[in-house]
Length: 59
Length: 475
Image 1 (cartoon, rainbow over the protein chains, first blue to last red):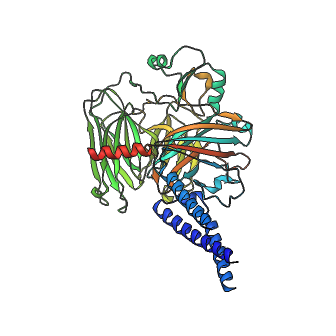
Image 2: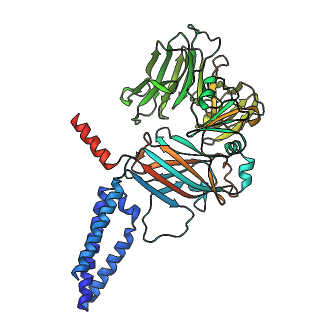
């Protein structure tokens, strides 16, 4: 269980960083990220991760 | 655990590097491709580079074109000098090619004010027929097709200087048109009034100045675009002048006198590039020959107009309910009873010079034609172009800058090289057009299916750009 939480932490921070990074890239180079990649997937995964994270922490 | 962490961050670093690379395009070449026949949605993929294909009412099933023309944008992260477009398409039926003059062109937007596109040929059924039956001489991209072989080289044909039975397609021949027995009439002037927007005309001079007095008016004080005047001789720009918007005030015309001296005898093209807010209340030509090219747009006329043209069919539009009226072409009457609607009128009589008259206060008249205000001022310096009226039996030579499409099953594949050096690139990217004038009825049974478009953009490499910046700084 402890290991899953740790992996969850890593993924959560990684996904958060990826979203921020892609947001910054989109501002600097307009259209770049959105043309190649569906960022909704990333946000969706981040939310799932967050929910799992909160749920596990409560338990 | 740490390995997994490092792997994720390294992956993100690589993805960022790759994305930045795809934006900068350091190698100077990048290809974008879209299969328009795919109906499923790629959940991981982005929104792609091709977008806003439309207008939607001219499309069925998202990729079948039933109206003309069709536009689409391609997002381009930076400027490029050339685009190589490969387009895969098919027709709804072979009858469509057999019964109509089927000419498809594509192009890129050059100027947003006049919606001016640089067009390139994609498919032409008349040329495909000629290419498969007539003997051909190929000179790089240019093809010389002769019904009866008279010339062994393209240069021999160009030098012989008689093009009365020749037809040209997507080929600009630099030749000096001489009007026989022309004499300058220094005391006479041609007065033309109330023109709207952009226009261009040919004029002829011999031992005289190229002299035209313009009067311009800006009817919209919010219009912040300049008005430009260009003069060309044998496709070379010899004069240009831009009138900045701040010199125009409402209701007071700005006069501009074009007066060019010491010019050789020949045809000169004068182009007035302006937005539709600019009016020309008066144009006085001191040269006796003047023909408008492809369009004339009148406004606020008191007693209507009379025009003379080498064609007998026109696209006509009215922009004001007051100007709805009848128009006569070679004494045949046609009614313009709706504003903003483009009417296609064709007279059953074809003369060398066709008379168009109307009591309307203002109309836009367009066609691939020349227009003059008097029969005496008309002359035709334009070489015969291949069009739907071309009778293949009456011509013996065709010069075309055209590549036949390849056939892949039911589909045709055409490759078109476009010059992007003067193309407009804004936040939306490059705007492209697909023109297929034979699709004019919005009939869902007759369509052009666009299966796939691939565009390879070619431009400066990162190294070339850096060298250019260093060179500029050194200077």
